[in-house]
Length: 346
Image 1 (tube, rainbow, N blue to C red):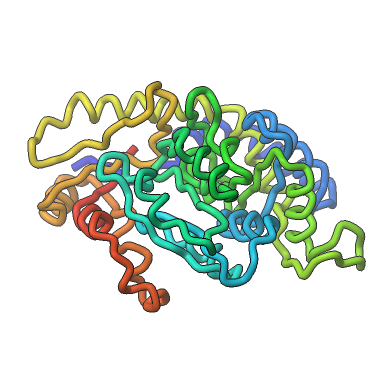
Image 2 (image 1 turned 180 degrees about the vertical axis):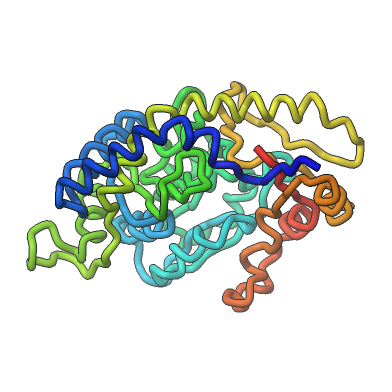
């Protein structure tokens, strides 16, 4: 039986192996491994790709979100609205900054936060909205802009899964005040280890993020902030720069694969994901997620036929043990959706 793995690095990595090895040798022979020219080059090229003024390379996606919120200066105890069905990193970035997450249920159609439910969750303590472009589909609307202006809010995008997606021609990561990216190996743009970035059109914010990620310092031994060590290393920057040149092409392949699923899956018990954006480039299909009330049977059937699948994510964040103080948060849609979703190979 031919096996179908959930994730297969071989097609892209074999194509770029010579370039990657050359990049490794360049970094190896430079004797400069942290905060060098490769990081600067990637930051410039990624900012250009994303049409933002600035990009700051950091260690991983969680740090990208953590530093974005910290740089915005939101105070202890302030509230941040966040979807209840995101990966836990989005919420960790909030609580690690001593902020309070306020959970809002997703839309059953898009899996993204239900934007129509956000306003009722806003209180005088609300200072920001964490927008997650889940599974690769852009999550945005004019209503978000209206809420931002009406309540004087900041918007931070968790763009770990939607690198290259667009909303009305604007790339995700260029919609809010700041955006956090993850370049974990399995992402559409993946490093060969952990890595991440922050994008923004606010030069001052970028300057603060850069300092915060380097021990709170721009000048060695002069510390403006109580920061942390979260710096993209030269080797990952060199690898990412090579992959960046192919990201739109690779995303298009994902869309083509997704179209095959849309055309080929006809079982009435399986609900296909819904595209909510007006154009095809609104989704980059980091994951192709179906719904099925008999999800566990479906998963076993696929396994019996050599097809690997995963669940992203089985438990809503407020139901996690580490967030038991939020266990009473009402998230009926997330509870239902998370019991039915299944990610199949892309």
